Image (cartoon, rainbow, N blue to C red):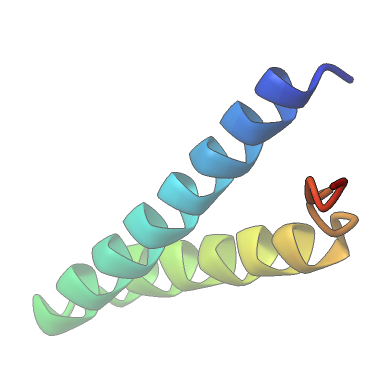
Length: 62
């Protein structure tokens, strides 16, 4: 996979994770349990996917 596409994918995954956690908190504060728990589960899924990704390659060549 091209490095730029991989960086974009990681960025979008991070955005989805942040969005899901925010929606979960807001929905739970509004006492909408179904929406809050669903968004919380989505956040957990995104977190696990992000953790399973291989580490980002670094440019340490001198």
